[in-house]
Image 1 (tube, rainbow, N blue to C red):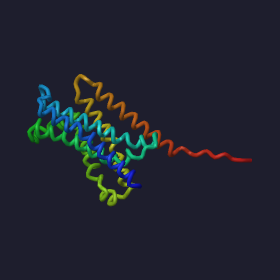
Image 2 (image 1 turned 90 degrees about the vertical axis):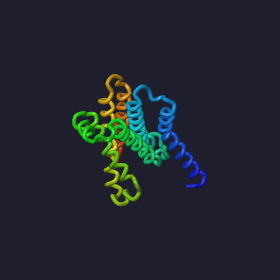
Image 3 (image 1 turned 60 degrees about the horizontal axis):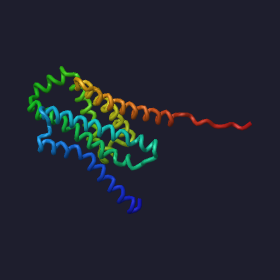
Length: 208
C-alpha cells in the first residue's frame, strides 16, 4: 500500500470514528443543556439502545457493500464500528443497571425472568460481549480463522434479538423498530443471496 493510500485510509478511519462517537457527544450535550426530556433515564436508555442497534446494522452492512459495490475499505472498518456498537449497547445496559435500578440485583434478576424483552436483550448482549472479547488479533490467532469466523457469524443472531428486544420494549410507536427490522432483513437476504451465489454450480459447455 502506498503512503498516499495509507494516509487516505487513516483519514477515513478517523472520519468514521468521529461519526460513530458523535451520538455519544450529542447525549452529553443534551444532558448538559437539559435536553433529556421529562424522563431523562428512559430517554438515555432508549437513545443508547437505538444507537447501539444502528451501529450494529452499519457494521453488518459493510460486507454487502464490498460484495455489491466492490468497496473494500468498509470491511477494514467493520471491527471498529462493531466495537462502537458494543460500546453503545454496554452503556445502554449500564444505564439500566446503575441509574434505573441503582444496582438492585434482586430487582434486575426479577426483571430478566419476568420481562421477556429484557431477557431477549440480555441474550443479545451476551452474544455481543462474546464477540467483543474475541475481536482481537490474539483471539483470531488462538481460535483459528475458521473457528473465529464461525463464532462471529452469531452477530446476526444478536441483531435479530436486538430488533425483537426493541419491538417488545416500545409500547406505542412501533415504526422505528420495524424499520430497523426491515433493514436487518435486507442485510440477511443479501448474505443469503451471496452464499447461494458461491454454492451455485458453474455451467460448462460441452462441445461435440
